[in-house]
Image (cartoon, rainbow, N blue to C red; front, side, top):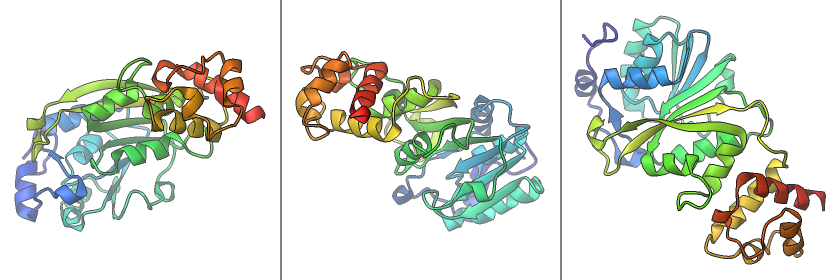
Length: 280
C-alpha cells in the first residue's frame, strides 16, 4: 500500500505488468508517489477542474492528481502495456479516470473533458516541445485550458522562461511569455526517474493570460520569430529578408536596429514588428 492511496507502490505495478520504460516512446517514469503528489499540488486547486494528462505510464502522476481531488482525469497513453495499470487506478477512483490508448497528437481531448480544464503531465521527451507549442498557438485565445503544469528536461524548461540576451532565449520563450505567465516551480534530479535520464528535469507552471501581453497577429508573430531564430547568429535584416523585402523599414518602425540579432530583441519589440508587417 502506498502513502497516498490504497493501491500498490509503483515498483510493484511496473513489475506486475512488465512495464520497463521504452526509449522509443521517450519514457522515464517518476516512481516516488510523494513527488508525483507534489507535482499535482503545483497545478493548484483541482477539485473543480478536469485534468488532461499526457503519457501517464504506470500512473504515478495520475494517482497524485486524483488524490489531490481532480474532478476528472483524462489520461492519454500511447503504450498499450500501461492500460491494465491505468484500469486498476480507474477502479480505485470510480468515475473519475478515463484512460485512452492513443496518440496525444491526434486525440481531441475536448470530446472527453468539461471546462475548467488544467493540463498536467510528465511529458514524453520526444513530443513534449511539440505539444507545448500546439497548446500555446491555438486558433483562438484564451485557450481551452487554464494552466499547464509540465515536466521537461531542464534545458527545455530554461528555454521557456529565458530572458533576452541569454543563450536559451528564442522562439519557445517568446511564444510562452506572449500569452502565459511561465515559471519553473520544481527541479528533479535524474535519480528520481526510472530509468534515470542523462539530464536534470524541471516542472514548469504556465498560467494562461486572458489576452496576449502585447497586440500582434499570431500568424505573423510566429513567422517572424521562427525566421529570426532559424539562423540566430544572423543580423535581423538578413534573417528576416524572406519575410519582407522592406524588412529594414519595418524593423526601424518597430524601434529595432536592423543590425541586431534575434536574441537581443524583447517580446514587446517583436510584437511591434509583427504589427508593422501585418499592416502592410
